[in-house]
Image (cartoon, rainbow, N blue to C red; front, side, top):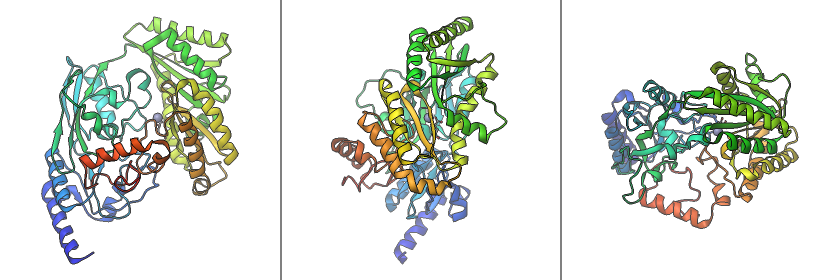
Length: 484
Ligand code: S2G
Ligand code: ZN
């Protein structure tokens, strides 16, 4: 580092401390480590500093200071990105800006059915605040205790209730964001209709912190469900699951809130790593579905619809067994099994994550073809396949065999297996990232699934809003500054 740059860094650090306060500005590598290593411990970066601003004004001043110094900024919420999207690279020239101190529930308007939150509110706290006000904030993902609303927005998070309520893009009425030069964009209005020019908020939602730092949002609230019915169902195969879903939508329509596919190896993985949990059905099955129906309050009608769906499923040979939740405790037990699949993979290590969405009419054939291709490449891989079949999204996550170390399995298979699965999804007009975003992990794969026009348009937007490429550089967009 030259004397000038050392002097400039010293000035920058001094300026950061002056804005956020000494305690909210970390510079020691050990202190910064939790903020520079990703959730899956696959990416280990370095940073000039980690700052934790308490207000939008502080975020604005930090951004303006870094903009003047030409220093990159990596925005970070709960750091639960699975794609390495929220940590700096190894260059060590960036500032990590973590939003966890901005955890205020600013307003809940039960007449307008909206709540205004600062970006650092965890999803769990957001859902609790809505519940306390007699409303539902329906975004539901396993990492809700640590992921934050800002990160949910920047990755357009989906989760297990998208089938009924949509993803973050659908649940957001307005946002506030800080631009690379420190200017503050705000559309914090709780309007369901506002056709006054470009819908700018949608540029920032899903942009993974590469266009602006989301600092607050106005989110939609839904009525609390009055009745819930759920079942853990053994199905013949994914084709049967799709037919059962079609029947469920015919019988129950909007009441179908979730329809999750779970492969046998996915359930086995959870039960192995959490022996205190028990399987809902006596036998093991290759394919299962967790279905959840909710409605305003007619529990009997809901139960009758669920029974009708199951009877049809049995009659048509789609369903081979089922456990029906007799209480909310049963429903929660089913969901715990489903939601533990992700952490069970993290604990086991050696998971190749392919977060695929495919038109529902093709998803069963995709699963069959992708499975055949993966087993040809890695015959002993455990086929952990699960997720939100209801909205066409499956987590196709081949996992290391028990007798192979994670590092060895990933070294041998990560590139070729994810390339095969993503390539098949692309050829089926599917997406290689349904809900987890791109980050670093999938960045270069975009070269094979996005048209040159799509990539150029994204770079044109990036150059328009962040010409210095200071916000989360190296994430999402392949190629150097648009030279694709
Ligand atoms: C899920 C979580 C991430 C993973 O459980 O629905 O989105 O591990 C996933 O694939
Ligand atoms: Zn998911």
